[in-house]
Image (cartoon, rainbow, N blue to C red; front, top):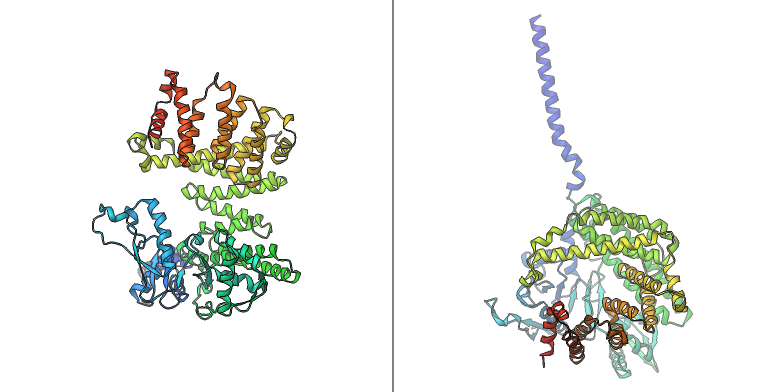
Length: 625
């Protein structure tokens, strides 16, 4: 009996021990199994391959300029400086953080000087000159803000490659960007004509003159066009046949076929959608870049299509547009799949709502926007995403009023998200900031508070517009505005003001060009009014719209000359017009307005006290030579 008891006890102990072992093993295996999809990086060569692919796009002895993104800069830094793979490249980055500081000591330089210096340095690099700065050991040395001097690269004129298309290349010289693989090469502007000719076959000299003027943002003459054409002809790329420039062949590729030379292994990673965001960002970047390239191609083709008259060429261009758009959708959808939680896909979502070819893919975009917002609840990033989302929703409603009832709930949901996020940034932040006259403007807490106010103002304005749209008596704003333009006498002053305010509010929220044009046309109607209060209202509106400077002067001058102004003077009209003129560089006009402002205030001690600060500003400007 005792033996049986001992055997049972021994069995119980073994059973408990076995259960414990299984439990411990289970607890150890559970994190492994549950996190395997996100932790498995054995096929993850994304950053390694991306850095090598970028460098594989550049010819020997090239200038290699990166935009400043982590994935670009640090992979390039490793391969160039650690592994010494491409010591022939002169590598720069746009922030001057890790490579040679081609823009000087940016941290200690005037931001305005930096903006100008970037143009100066880049234009010289494109022209084959290398920047050098005077050695400085003290950041207080006044030479910190000196521009560099330039000398030719010792290898001679070097190819220049960029990982992005630097904006406004025409400001740097007669250049264009041409894509080779995943990099952009700086080439003479004449090569852009070859890209058009490769599809159109030929263009007239007059048409080429128009194209060069458009690309360079300045008028060029016939002689300039002929010089460019003769240069291309001497190299065998085109031939001149009377008044036409005829395509012969394009420039040869700097290197062999790019994509066959690249290592693109990320499409073979089965768990890529589950990896961390920074890893997926590289795959998303490939897709987004290719999508942007296709869309740029579409825009060029559409311009080409509009100016082409030959039916067979127009048909060929239309087919190219269709093919490019199909490829755009493919790569953007893939980017959305991998970047479901990344703000990098916003460009693709925008393209799905407002694309160049007019295909309505908004119903595919809205759920993706909502899912993206769900990853950023109560964060600062939510505000930027929501603003883009709201703009697209509003513009869709403006264009298609019949979709209002479907889309308004989405906008109202966004307002709730925004208010919840803003509640975390309460007005108590104002207490953290010192008074303005004690440096408050440069205090981070004060700047944060000002940002909070802007977001709150935006949310309040959006809320007001949505409530107006929900009212039972809400009308078709565009139709009502056009009716006002046709029969202004049939509208009361209050109705005119309400329509104008709604047009401006909706334009500010969604940057909708038709509403902006209607608002401008209504302002022209109001300029014919003689009512003093209406002129004051129109002037206040004009002062708030940056593009309406001329209208602000027009209404302001009419107010200052109005017979009611003597009985009801409004000194701030003269003052604000003076500041507006001063800021635009018209000093003589500014002084004229400010003298009028001072004369108005001199008659009243109450006005002098009320406008004490403005009077000091006026005296300062009037004292200038």
